[in-house]
Image (cartoon, rainbow, N blue to C red; front, side):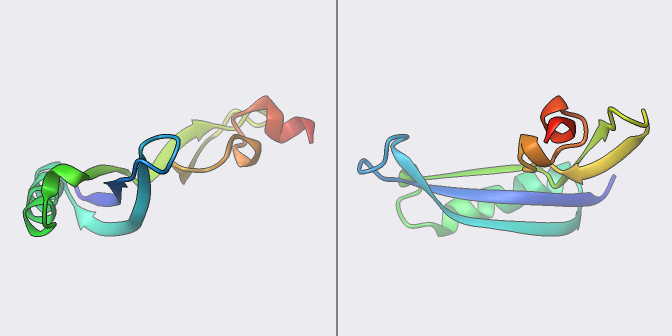
Length: 93
């Protein structure tokens, strides 16, 4: 099934608390799981020492249930909790 994906690329960086920093986040459209796995392999082969980079991909949208209406809606996967209608924090502000 073809869908949109968000691809994150991190680089090792000892100066940060997590030991890595986000250097790129992009959305790729109309691809399935196997195409994305191939895309990540190609990306890691292009990055010069690939052991210094980490690449991860996740579906761009997620389905949540609105607490007030009970209906399912789609929101971007990286939506903050305060902006997510499926959380109590959204409705208490």
